[in-house]
Image 1 (tube, helix red, strand yellow):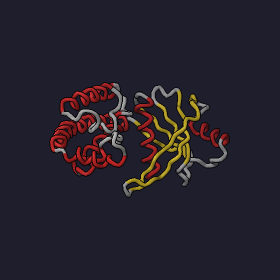
Image 2 (spheres, helix red, strand yellow):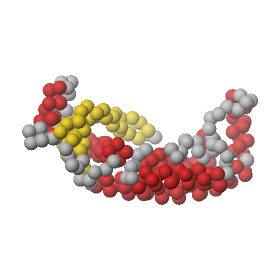
Image 3 (tube, helix red, strand yellow):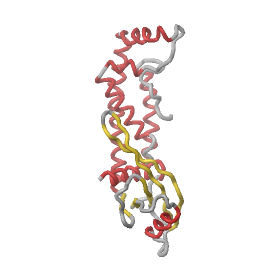
Image 4 (cartoon, helix red, strand yellow):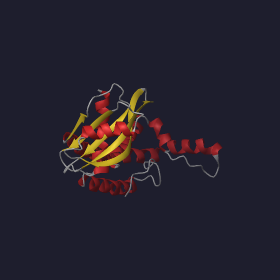
Length: 236
């Protein structure tokens, strides 16, 4: 089963046994992914659904927003009335509360497992600056490598700031530039100098090297951890 639909809680049949079937299939897929030490996309998916369930449980007024925004045959004018009828139905609300009570521990357990794996992967990684650092940190280069360290993926990164829930958040966009082979003559410092000559719009860029001690699935695990390490390093 792929990721859960955003409106899984209220989409389709609102019945505890049906939702159990849906959730068990989903968590089976999550467990299989974590067994392969593949964190994403399921770790982010778990965070989204767990927080959403907590919000809905804490504030029943959010239940209205949880219902899929599909128009009835009566049209837009009666849509609000239809929602109110559903929310006012005690039997439906009781069933939804049973589903949430069943689902929350499952999401929490899987989220804890994914977080444990994430922390372990992060503990096996180090991030260090390459060469002289610049005060301008919003753009630069990210080098990522893992055993046997024969090849290094080099990305150009750009950090942006945005507001979310009255908090300033950071996001990192990375674009793969090239894959290089490190040697005694082709060091990380010399690779950085070559990048400076090739991309002159960044005359004095920051470059960071993430090295993993162990080999992990690259795209679903190591790269997301490397990007998170980069955000932490830049935010220091």
